[in-house]
Length: 165
Image (tube, rainbow, N blue to C red; front, side, top):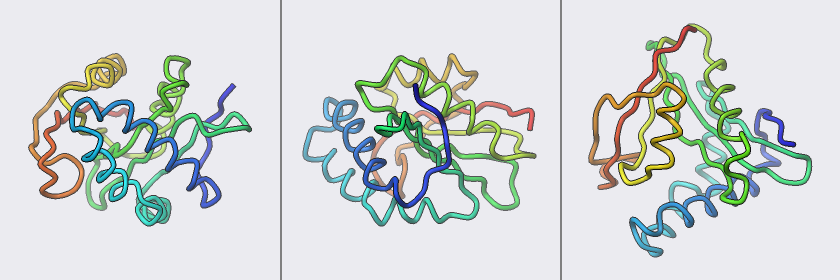
């Protein structure tokens, strides 16, 4: 059984494993192995994970069963806004379908008192993720040609959900 807790520096290697495994399984069919490895090296590097862990406006969670990290989520709340951005929610392929994503998502929704909406970007070809987010109240509100980092060239749906704060 997995429980959701705040991530810490001791989780960095396991978080990177979750990110790498999930990206390889999910996105290699879309972008090819080389592009996925390039993204993993950049977006999911040790430095990138450490930087997100250190963000004062962020919440970084892991799902832990005492033996392994089965999933992770990272969101932030931009100063001066009522919007929470869910940057990452990933569950190891072998751990999907047992409620880890649901539990991480539910916890993120409660981490930012006063927030009025939750937004995220998801690849338009990632139908399982889109279905997951729709089942949790997210609706498509736009599109971008540059998911994640500036000028990534990766298209994404923008999904939003009102929060009751």
